[in-house]
Each structure stands twice: as C-alpha cells, then as structure tokens.
Length: 220
Image 1 (cartoon, rainbow, N blue to C red):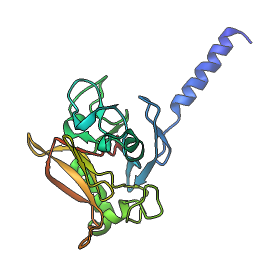
Image 2: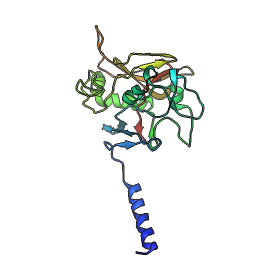
Image 3: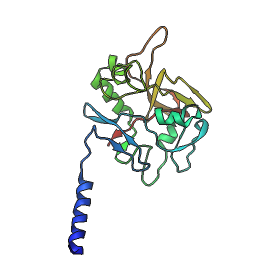
Image 4: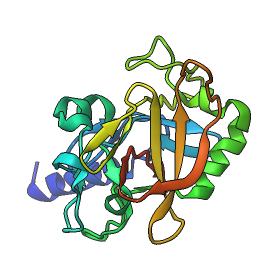
C-alpha cells in the first residue's frame, strides 16, 4: 500500500471520527482534562448529569481573576471534589476568557442563564420540579428525591470565603445571570429538615457572588 493511499485512509477515518454527532445521553469527555460526565435530555434541553469538577484546586474559595480556572473542594478536601464536584464563585464561573472560552464549562457547553433554568422548571412543573431533579435514596450519593429526570442532583453544599456548610442538605447552582454588582441569580434544591421540605427547584437572587456554588452545564 503506497503512502498516498495510507494518507487518504487516515484522512477519511479522522474525518469520520470528528463527524460523529454527539447525542444527548452519551458520555461527555472534557477535552481539557479528560474527565467524563454523564448527560441527560430533559425536554429539549441537554444537561450534564453531574456537577462540574474542572479547575485548579484553591483553598477557602479564594478564587481570583487570574486567567486560570479555579475551584474549591468542600471543606478543602480534594476527595469531596471527586464525589461532589467543585465549588465556584460567580465571578470564577463566568467572568474570564481563556482561549475564547467564556465560562467554566467545556467547549460546546455553557453555564445556563436564568431563562434556561426557568424553562426546565416549566417543563417539569414547578411544584415537583425539585423532587424530580434530586437523586433518590438508592443513588450514590443518595438524596430524598425521585430522580425521574436522571438529572441526579446531589446535596453538595456551598462555601463562602473560608467557610463551608449544608453538605448533605442543600444543592446550589449558579446561573450566568447577574442581578447587580453584588448579587447573581442561582437555583436551590432543599433537603428535608425537621419541620419542612421543599419539593420545587427554587430560583432566586439573594446570594452574594462571593458564595461558592456547584455548576451544571447545558449544551449550546
């Protein structure tokens, strides 16, 4: 076989491999570090079904706008990042550009804005949206939902400066939509407490951008 034929075959297989279309539900490989994430289609949206865990680990949510993606692990324990994903301040999640990348999500994906979360809530029905998104008691990590969507939300907690809390009880996700210079929109799933339990996915704007929350990416 001559070199021209070999080159033609290699070009064909390279083109074929690159032309393979991603179907929601396929595994997503983040080309930046090789980590693999589950994905799920809910309505006409395609979501990552795991919390993002990309970036350099820094302690105490001390993430800065230094041109490098940074994350913090709950309680500054790296093992928590592996199980729960990273925690990101709002500025770290959205406000830098590295190689034309405008947020923490992999290429072809982005940090959902407020309207995209609202669309998810509307599709599921507001009153039970949270229950459908949360991991079930048989999932690992487990929670108190039904996980009928396959979104597999887990109670990863949050961080604020050097403090951490609510792991095992709450999940928080940033949106890319800011309220003003100090606050940004987020979504919140509440676990059960002694007196009450939220079954909806709450969308609000009361937390400072310095809080460190989980990130779920949505396909472009």
